Length: 317
Ligand code: SER
Image 1 (cartoon, rainbow, N blue to C red):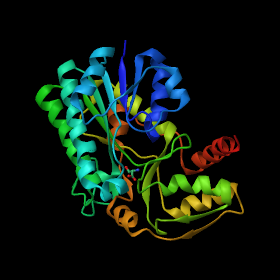
Image 2: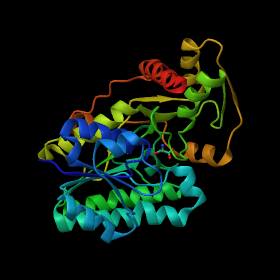
Image 3: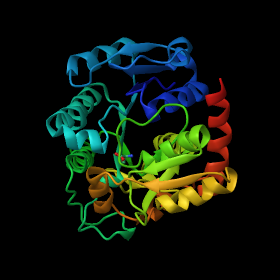
Image 4: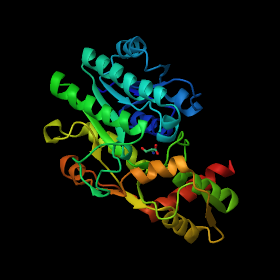
């Protein structure tokens, strides 16, 4: 029987991944860990919730012991723009806390899922069909922490036999919880603004392509990877995964098909534009497809239809 701890369960991915894990493995078997942000009623009432600061090793250790945890989904992290504004904190949260999680996992023999990101690449990485194994010289602190995290996962697997697995997530689009300060957030904001005001000002420039994914695929990817046969996994740092690649004008055109009055203009944020320019246009995720059957369900059109339908209902409440 699986006993899972999700750190960062109150965040954009955590809030949905935790509920899906509870559905699949039973509410009492999934411990939601969170730090500052108040959890939703749904998260609090459907299973155990524990306050956990992952920069404190003992705090993680106590929870893992208390619930007999065998798997940790370690989602607590700062996103790219926030990390760039506070690089020291980003190192503490994205790297030191991961080391704590890996150490506790080593002690108690837990499997560990860690998200990496398109941010683990930089300007010297091939930007089209970015290979699984390639140059990783990111120019952001977020990227530095993500590459470090990937190397740590590789190291703990090889040195200690720890069952580490990870994904290089692209921008994740969702309607339950807002992302907390990433470069790809424009592709979430656009739907909120299209429904509320029929217009949006993009902080990312026309022509800037980035990989993206709808939340149901992101949640399935994490669970499918953790359930994959370990003998089939060659890569233990993190897998490239993507579902679509688009620029702001592409998503705007798709929104306009559903909300014809919609218009978009631009007011480019130099910080986030600089970050976006340093990331790939489109990753090659064939290793994920071959090693554990990655196969996303949503493209830009299907995602836009679902997102606008669900978000319209949510905003009416
Ligand atoms: N969505 C993330 C960010 O923009 C990328 O991993 O920071």
